[in-house]
Image 1 (cartoon, rainbow, N blue to C red):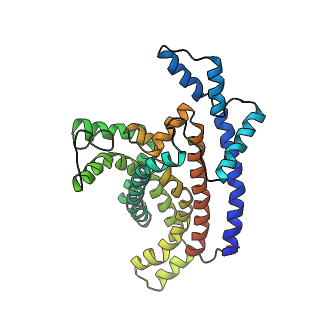
Image 2 (cartoon, rainbow, N blue to C red):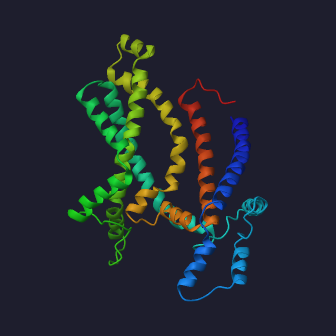
Image 3 (tube, rainbow, N blue to C red):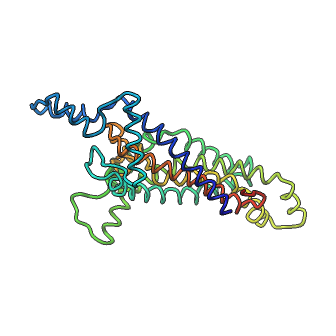
Length: 330
């Protein structure tokens, strides 16, 4: 096991270097110029910027040479800083990229974690129920819910919930993370946080349970038609034992695969949902950085997610060996 983990970690280093190079080149080729946007803002204020100042700004931010060799040199400069655990300084926020990520990551992680817990609590039992009552009213109802969850765009559904629950009924705040006009402390502050994130979490849960229910139902149907399930029933096992002990464990095997994408999704932020509800999460910040050409932050943010993705895949492979003893990790 240890040998397998070490081998995968060494492979991951080369994978991350390749991913970082692709991301850096793509970012440098984006039609967004942070320096030019900054100069335009200065010019709109009535001031003028000399060419010498412009050249100095491009040199200061390391964006002066957009040729292949210049971009390659910029990448290796960034890579050398990364090996010193330095993600650079954000162009937009003028503070270290790591500090920006830490400041905004907690909000996105909390919302995603709560939504994921409710997603599993709702989707897996419903998927099992649909599979064990195939072609019944329950199965058709779950299928309808699946199609709704998969088909609705998050920006449309989020705005619809906000319009009904916040603007028309007034049950919850429409946007933001906290009531700026109040000075809550303690339990009142937590309640205010909960009221502000309720609709975003509800949006994520409803739109995500569809795919999870469909996966659980499909896997459960395959398992229920297996020979060992028929053998367990023939031996007189109760149906609850057949489902919960024999069938459900093998249903978990494909679900483990989804853990590879689950870990980075907890930290990446729901960009569209955060935009709709104006939440200061990492997804909202990342979108703003992309639009403004904040190269250090975009690189740091994407590499953070790349590391989590690699670790997620490794964890999913290790979990395979636990869930399915037939899998040998070598």
